[in-house]
Amino acid sequence: MTNKTCLAMGYGLLAIGFLTGCAGKQVKIDPGNPVYQPKSGFEKNYGFFITLDERKIGYSLEKYPKLSESVRPFDEIDTLDEFRKFEKFFWEIRDTDINTPQNEFKEMIDGRLKNIENEIFASDIDIPGTRFSRNGGLKGDMAHVYLFYGEPHFKASFSGDYMELMVWYYFDPYYDRPLFRFLFYRRFDRLTLFKHYGFIDLESVLKEISYRWLSSQEDFQFAWEELVQNDELVAGNDRNGMEFAFRAALSEFSAYSSDIVIENGDEKKFGALDPPEPAALTAERYKPTILGQPETEGRSFIESSDYSLIPAKVVIGKDLKTGRPTFSLSISSYLAVDWEIKGEEAEFSLDLRISFQHKETKAIKEFTVRLLTVKSKKEVEDKIGAVGIEIHLDGMKNFAQEEPRLTLRQMIDELESGEYVVNIDLRRTFTKKYNSWHEEIKID
Image (tube, rainbow, N blue to C red; front, side, top):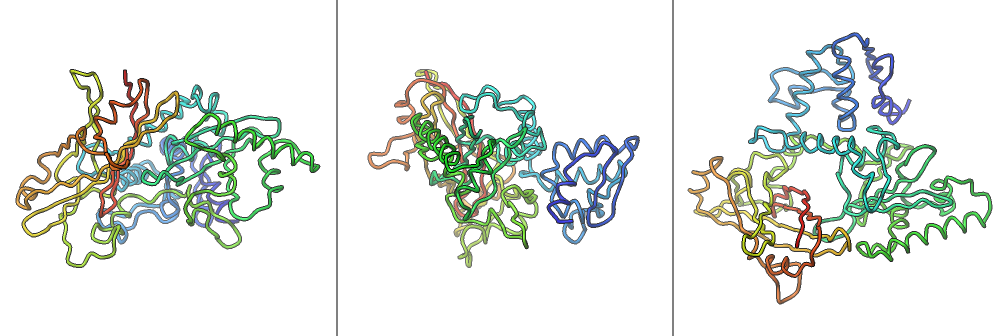
């Protein structure tokens, strides 16, 4: 039995109970066991996030020294007490800001689960009628991608005589190039994720993504023309200049060379949908003094205790005189960022990108700025954990444009009226910790 088959079985819920541990101990849980319902519910909602180590090895004191005792592997757990220990530590090591009472990572995933339940794409203007429940529910490819990456920056779909396709694009916030292109095609009763990237002949690709049998050159020609025509339709709607939205997603997963598709023996492993590493392990491996740049000799930091996420948000207010939106960056505390010590001073810099996309016209305006904050070392040491930091953004100049650079306030004043999706990306310049989210606003 292959590792891939083993994982697939691990994700399934069997009506007679759990059968887990493909390569090791098998555990069958009777539905009358008190652990059956909570464990099955956890598997249903969060199964994609359970790493292979968590399934087969558990939590050891050697790897997780903060534990008071080791925790058995998920696949071997057969008591409610053991499951509660696993569940507690599962979320603890994924908490991206340990200084707040809430677990931001869990809240984000639970919010996405709620969006799936509410079928947020059913009436979406770009992919109307798209439902998770018709495409495998929480165990489908579509839910898998959404739970990991959230709402795509660009999406489009079509249903033709030969194929039904949908694409989701996620962009690099700095260079506006695709980080991920996920393409789904209708396979039997559900949308399935296309994974066969690399060199493959066109006829094989068309055979895979078509729901009709292609038996002649004429069939292949018609299928290809249908694909081209729908690409042209998307481009004609001027959606981010996506001239080859579907064809690009068939030939290349990302604009960057990467190990997204990993050779694993005789198999190909789609690394983009592997369970993400817990934040605690990421933080241990990537200390601020080595993340982002190798030249750290002679540099010292007051290190944030946050694992990878900057606990900050852009607060959108309203100007009482003009009614136009105002923007400020609110950082939860002095401890929320990594301060670099330079003599008697301490400083940090953040790269902020805000894009405004008109929901009707799809036009995008972008604002970027590097925010440098310098304080005395003593002030930082005195105020750590006690107070937050607020940076007003309206007067900042936009470095996403040539001279003369407009301020954020001036750029917003030039936006046409309507509803906008505001995508925000915040990164610590040196240590590369980040936060990304989106808001919706209306400009009258």
